[in-house]
Length: 202
Picture (cartoon, rainbow, N blue to C red):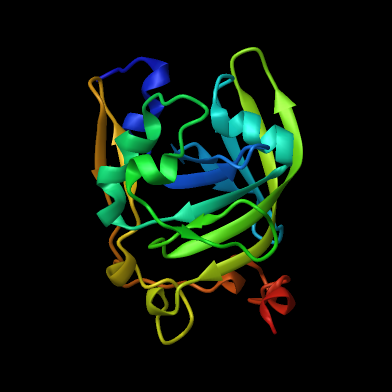
């Protein structure tokens, strides 16, 4: 079956991250974003795509900071309350019934109950007629202890990361499953060694 090209997200499961920001007047904002990704493995950059008319975009441009909040499937009922239109003077933490988690390096707060928080500063912006690409530099990455496996990796079974696929009528929320298969990065290289292994050492 052939589908229209813009229906990519219907067949490419996407993460649902909540971006929290704050206006110059101190008003807190939350918006769910699925067009978000890290930029290559050795870098501390993250990229998100934004529509042109978003309070989140205004706040990031004004204050040059934001928090990427990674959440579990239990946050699925918070997507619509934070996605639908609300006036710029509305506090979306209050509207969605969410508590804030104070940040350590920036003014914008995180969202309590998330399993991970990335405190970011605006690194670069790419503007096109129909969209904006925002590059953020991760200043601080914190993960809840209970979200980690004994080896220090994300425990998929515990966290159940919130994801979605699009359809002709809306969003289908889902999560991911650990299939129990692991391959080291070094397996991709002829000598079996990961050239970036030193970056992971404390």
